[in-house]
Length: 309
Image (cartoon, rainbow, N blue to C red; front, side, top):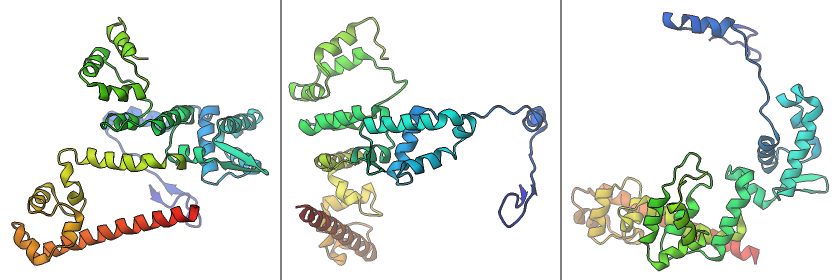
């Protein structure tokens, strides 16, 4: 592109050059002079519901007037003005009936559930299924191992995934009785798994009430991230600390942020091979900053809890 075509106040026109090889000559000619394909709006009730949930959740649509103004700016309105607003009203009714949004004194607002769905970019059509899983976990989360947490982290829809039920059942059979409690919590019974394994067709067609789960998942994420050396997790969080140096620090007795924050730079440098005193000072300072941030976060959480009492 040459010039400032289309830029307000700069120019009304400009020159554009399309470059290609001789082998692409026909393709480029068809691109420039060929028949243009029709452009049709892809907004239907399902996609419009997700769009409206995002707009309502972000506060861009707060009333019926805002909704009408938005719809009049869509391609759908210009292609089907008679049905456009009807589709919008149907999509809004779906959001209300599904408890994603609510109307109060003429104002349209997202519910807590609706905000959680749009912030997570979750498809509204499957969000209730996900919520049901969270509610079940909130009632009886199995913490005898990490299996239940891993199950809850798996996306609810995995298209194109082939399940070898025989292999699945063989793995299940090797678990002990306590681990099988996780499968029961997820609604998977041994009889169902056996039936799938030995059947001829083995293919397969922000919420405050759940605050307790967040700390559990935080711990799981850390364990998965540092799966090879979970004991080094705290040390590896310090900027610039690699796995090798973390092992040296751990072996030398510096097994936590508290230990590192309380260390003397000279002593730390002498305890760790190839560590200069300047590097030791930087590690100690980083550990102190991280501890202070953790303390501040706990203080803020405590103050917020007291305000709600």
